[in-house]
Amino acid sequence: MADVEDQPPVPVQTHRGNRPEIVGGDEPESPFPVELAGPVQRGFGRGGKDLGCPTANLPEDTLHKLASVTKTGIYFGFAQVSPPDDQPDALTEEERKVYPMVMSLGWNPYYKNEKMTAEVHIMYNFRHDFYGFPMRVIVLGYIRPELDYISREALIDDIETDKRVGVNSLARPGYKKYATDPFFPS
Image (cartoon, rainbow, N blue to C red):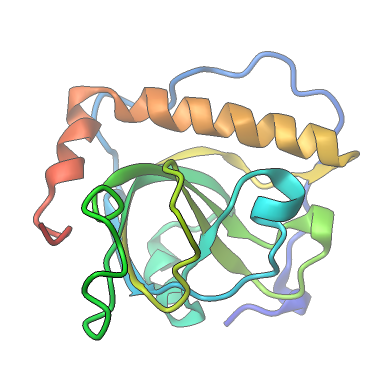
């Protein structure tokens, strides 16, 4: 897996200006869709606490599947969390549904991470943490490159824009159909 020595330099965000509200074509373009699955891992605990954007981290061994997605940055698609076999009632029926997601793939330079992570923000308010629960993700498109930030507020502003762009981009029929893809258990 990539270590800090492999981390490429990234631009520092100073002024973002206007960003598009929708990205990508009318349907996913190669190399998408990319399917990822694995148990939710504990991260650094910053997403929900520091940024107001809780994330579910994919295991390191799933990152190799992203080899076809050659750049770090923010992606969009759909995600689903399932209860573990030994805890069939751990999630409500509502929590088991497929939801839009945005995912950060990279080094999180604002926090100076020393290894690459894939952190998924599912756009649903779960009742509690679900570490170790199986998660499936279909990555459907790229929103923007990874950036460093001059302030936490600038990072939060970009995250909120990323969420809007992800939801808007997924609303098109060529993307929306993936919410019912057979990859997601019913």
